Amino acid sequence: MVIKPKVRGFICTNAHPHGCAQSVSNQIDYVKSQDWPQEGPKNVLVIGCSTGYGLASRITSAFGYGANTLGVCFEKQPSERKTGTAGWYNTASFHQAARANGLYAETLNGDAFSDEIKASTIEKIKDKLGKVDLVIYSLASPRRTDPDSGETFKSTLKPVGKAYTTKTYDTDKDLIHDVSLEPATQEEIDHTVKVMGGEDWERWMVQLGEAGVLSDDCKTTAYTYIGKELTWPIYGQATIGLAKEDLDRAAQAIMSKLSDKSVQANVSSLKALVTQASSAIPVMPLYISLIYKVMKDEGTHEGCIEQIVGLFSQCLYGNQPIYDDNNRYRMDGKETNDATQAKIKVLWDKVTQDNFHELSDYKGYNTEFLNLFGFELKGVDYEADVSPLASWD
Image (cartoon, rainbow, N blue to C red; front, side, top):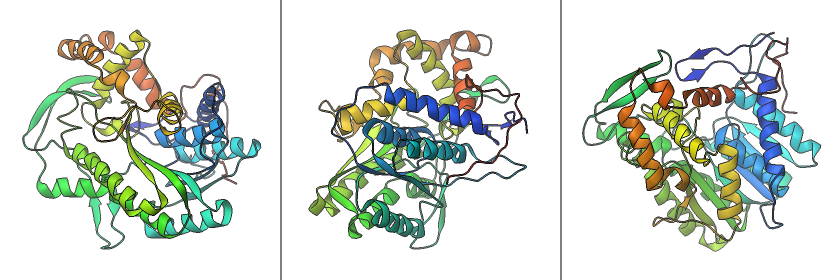
């Protein structure tokens, strides 16, 4: 079939297998082009491994340090008539490349929040790896079922304390407009923390530790976005921000509960990028379009793979980590510094429907959005008749 993107709102409902393969190949090539020290992870577990920062972490582990990787994700496989998800194709391409380089690569497909997947992961580690020395937690989901109570919680993207009105950009209608959001109830806050907070990360690490599959001095990190003034009302100081703050609590709990293994747990704050998750958050498409304009003009723009390479080489396994007061790794400084934010604020105040495409880099934003699903990548023939089928084996 000839596969063209089918975009509905902030999601693309199909994916291109050859385009996803090209995206993975591009990231591998970037990682291989870097200078890597000998010291690094040997066996890595990536929870949320199939797209975005999680996929970049898996690629960096494998092709930067030669690590064996076990991944966990929840993706839909293709059929003869329908494409699979982008994450399915990304994983298939990663498996092929890793194994061609003599590296172990296997992925469990299922609900990472469930204890069943945790148990299966533990058995796989025991069977294939023995122990892991790095655990990456990079899940993004709108809902989570608590393994203890069986209750399903759903996250909410709302401000906390008071209503909030701001500019946003409707990608479907190509329209700058105001959006007003009512404050979250306490129940909505609590539910968002249950889904997007640190409870599941902590649960993973405790169960891995109790099963004896963590190496001494194992490292673990969970990814977050903090942002600055323009995004705080809907992100940092909103329901999602409170959930992300719970990651800080979880990091301390993990180190306390696994002190006998000297586990090092840190939250990593990364820059704003086009991801499937960020596209759904009010304000973010407009904000990201503007920061892309500013940071590309400054020569400081980075994508997922550049950010993660920096995190590994500088913070996780480097000698120049950047910490904040909460012991988080900070890789977002090129975005959140005062000078760059001042430039973005000027554009934010100026932007209107008439000048949006002039002041922003929406073209870059939209291209990266389509790239997530394997579209608009150089070197891919999108007029070709291709099979949607792809295997992880």
